[in-house]
Image (cartoon, rainbow, N blue to C red; front, side, top):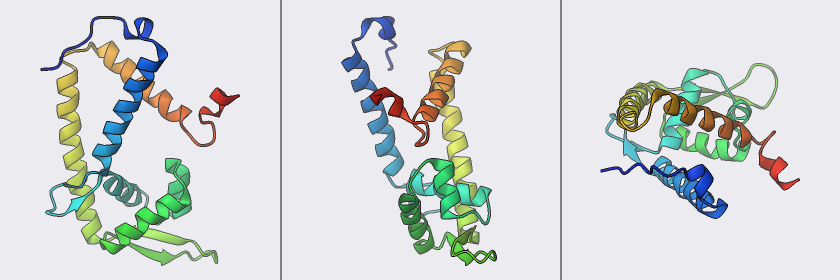
Amino acid sequence: MIIIRHENIWETWDSLRKSNLINDYVTRISDRNNRRKDYGTGELYTAVEAHLLLRIYQSPGTTVTDLAKETGRTKSAISQGVKKLEQYKLINRAPQNNGKRKSALWVTPKGKQLCLAHIKYDSERTEKFLDEISKYFTSEQMDAFFKIMEVHYLLLSPEDGLDWINK
């Protein structure tokens, strides 16, 4: 059973306690995203791999550079992920026709099958999650939660990131 705090965390907790909660939350999400699971295809993939594949599926012909800009990750990190997806035979690379050395990325039929299974898997689990937490919070509080996540995500962007904190 989940116990919802009635105290005002924002005003009553000190910065270290808030920081520890944020760190613990982010660590748990990161661990979850790196755990292998079956999305319905009988094979195990991490959420990081499945979401990278989904981005390629949604933007056929995209490049490592495009994906790095879109996700705020380094080209090296994206390249490593792409290499794994190629090894799993979920994507193919094809040289671009513009004379540059960049390769376009395309999802294979096996990759498409995983994407469709992953979309179904995530949709079902997200709905269950939102149904569960909405038992404890109002619609306005749920909206505030998503707005806070969106702003936090933007503040973490490599271009505009949290460098302003160190200035």
